[in-house]
Structures are given as C-alpha cells and as structure tokens.
Amino acid sequence: MSVTATELWRMSGLELAEAIRSRRASTQEVVLAHLRRIGEVNASINAVVMVLGEQALAAARVADRAVARGEDLGPLHGVPFTVKANIDVVGTPTTCGLKALANAYPRLDAPHVERLRAAGAIPIGRTNLANFGIRWHTDSELWGATVNPWDRSRTPGASSGGDAAALATGMTPLGVGGDVLGSLRWPAQCCGVTALKPTLGRIPRATTIEPMDMPIGSQLMMVDGPMARRVGDLRVALQVMAGPTWRDPWSMPAPLRGAEPPKPVRVALVVDPAGQGAAGQVQEGVRKAASALEDAGYVVDELEPPSIEVAAKAALDMIVADTRATWGLMPFSMPADTTRFISSLLEVAGDPDPLCLMTRAWLLRAWAEFQEEHPLIVAPIYTRIPFEVGKDLSVAEVAETVRGMRMAIAVNALGLPAVAVPVGTGDGLPQVVQVIGGRYREDLCLDAAAALEERLGIITPIDPVAAITNIVVEA
Image (cartoon, rainbow, N blue to C red; front, side):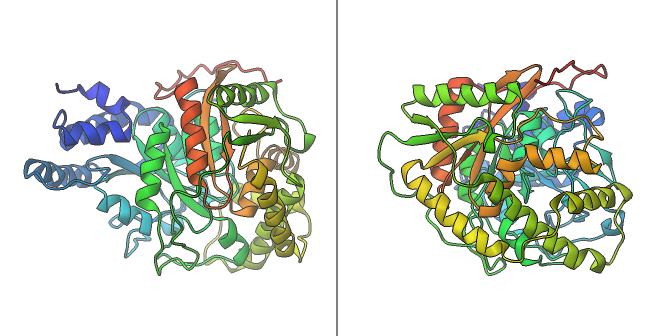
C-alpha cells in the first residue's frame, strides 16, 4: 500500500528507507513531499537557507532507477537530509552564515556527508546557524534569525538551530550539525528533537575551506553529529558516519558496540548540576526520564560525577585561550552581535588557566572511574527554559547562559558522547535530557535514549506556532 505525501514528511528516516525499499513510495515522492513541506512552513521559521531542489530531485531519479534494477541499497537509500551551513557539501558554499564566505565553495564533501551520500541519503538543503557557529542563538549575517517553532519569542538554540527547527517541523527527517559548547544538544532541547554528540574522533570532521584547522582546545571539543526526530535514525546515521579517515587526525577506528556492562545498568541522575539552580520545568523532565529508565530495568541513583564546575571552567579556558590567540588573525571582520557576544564571553570566563589541559586529563580519569560504577549519566542540557530572543549578549546574560549550560559544556571539555532525547513537554515547551556515556560508548547512550523514547514517545513534527507567542512561566 502506498503512503501519502503528508505521511511521508512525518516519517522517520528508517521508515522512509523501508518505504522506498519496499516500493510503497518512490524516492522522488519522498523528496517532493519534503520540498513541499519546506515551501509550506520555512518562510515562517527561516531554518532552511538553501533549498537543493533540483539537485535532490536529480539524485532521487537515480535512486529510483537503482530500486527498479534491484540493486543492493544502502541503509539510508533515498532519505533526504539537511546540512548545517558550516559543513562542506560540494556544489554549495560553506558560508558559516557570513557574507565574507558567501562564495566559499568546497572541493570535497565533509567526510561524513560523503558517507551519508554513499549510504543513499540525499542532501535537500543547507540550514541556518549562528555567525561562524559562535553564539547560543541562531542568527546569521546572511540570512537573519531562525524562529523557534514552539514559541516565536524564544531562541531555537544554536549553533545548529536551523537543523533542529527544520526537523521539528517536518522539513527533513535527518540533519547534520556540530557541537563545541552544546551546539547539537541545546537546539535539540529548544526544538524538541534528538541529537547525538559523539565522542571526540568517532565521526571525522574536515573542511577544504580556510582556515582548515583550529587551535588545540577547539580541536579537543568540536565534533559533528546527526540530529533526527527518532533515536533509531541517530543509530543508523552514526553507523554510516563513523570511522577513521586521513582527513581528520583525531578520527579513530573504535568499535560501534562495546563490552556489555554488568546488569542492571546503573544510571547517575543529575537534577541540578553542581547545585547552581535548575528550572522546575527542567527538573520535572529529568525526573520523568528517571522513572522511565527505572521502568526499563535501569537502576537510577541520584548523584553527580566529579567536579562539574571545574570541567565546565576547563572548557571555557580552552575556548578563551583559542579565541584570544586567533580572533585578531581572522581575514574578515565579524558582525557586531558576534563581536559583542565574544567580548561578553571573554569577560565572563576571565583569564584562562594555562594548565587547563592538565586539568582536563585528571577530570577524564575521575569521570572514567565514576562511570565504572555508573556507565550512564542523565542530566539537563541547559538548566533553564530557552531564553527570550536577544537575551544572550550582555555580560550578565552570557554569564547566566554559561551557568545554565554547565553540564553540556563539561561534556564537551571531556570529549564524551551524549544523546539528547525528548521526554515530553512542560509549560508549552519541550523537555529534553542528555544521556552521557563513557568514551566511545554511544551504544549505551542510544540504548537508554531508545528506552526513553519507547516509554515517553516523540513530540515532533509540529506545525510552527502562530505569530502570537505562547505564554511560558519559568520556575
């Protein structure tokens, strides 16, 4: 039985691949359904900034011929995906949201984009981001701001906010973004979708656009990863995207499945990281996750990994040291809002500790020892609800955002994997937690996230809210 166009844009990536494989839908029908959905809703939220309609339909015709010939099909054959505009896709500019890079065309796909294409997936659009990926709100010099489809007065997150908003509204079933200080998980929280921040080195990242390399602190924290509405899509995307390449010196040939931990698996529950305060809506979501995991057979203990604040400070130290060393070397000027944000962040962070990499090493040992007993940690991503648009630029506002993002930032400092997964809604906004694992234990994170999804359901796709904003009260 064939499926309708409306059903197609609501389906997961794996469901779409199966519909194409079983010939219940053609790849062209799948691509057209998502192009129509983009045409219907993108103008109201500004998430997809380059629509690759002709290229996607041409690829869809090739994909359909492969089905007709009975060829072996990749796991994502015919599935559309979007790509954040600071990740290389041949034939489109890697703009990073900046006018200065409007014509920066790469010579090669990013390694993981190349692998997604080889698995049969089809790029359908480029998505918005904060300028140069810098800021926790998606607003670019080239394309303007992306709107949170749940509440237009609040941020969709950043820097991968375009992909998160596109996923939440059904414009794509799969997205590709990046994360250096929460930039995959934070938009997932804001928009109610799921995302995988992989272990450093798990998914290779590389560009052919200068500057091709980053300072050491950023290298140790920056990763690319998939975003989706369903945990199963993250799992198959990881399988496709992972693996070493000469283009990324950090990439590793680590197995996708590790040794089975003792059963039942113990989970450390962190409701209010480092006791710095957390909104009631956020705490409620974390406790929902705890109950669901207990129902799935996990043992949940309310306790924290060591020195969360120290880990978050180490991340800021690495970023600040990098920024001070390179900011004046940029071959172009940054927009005023980006410069204001960086100035505020530098003031909040203070002088970096020159021994921060030593601090990172002992923290890695301390967390690894903690995770011998508790292989998984469930915690907030941002401890407040999404802030109002424009409330992230002053020194006081940046300090509040850093405080709220402390657990997400700590995870980046240590290069650990984490899956963002929705657990419901509260006060009209998504509730999303992060499931944090040990190094290269994405498998355990995904297993627990799948258990949460199975018990608590999914909350997207949605239609964007009307111009009248929701009323949200933050506890």
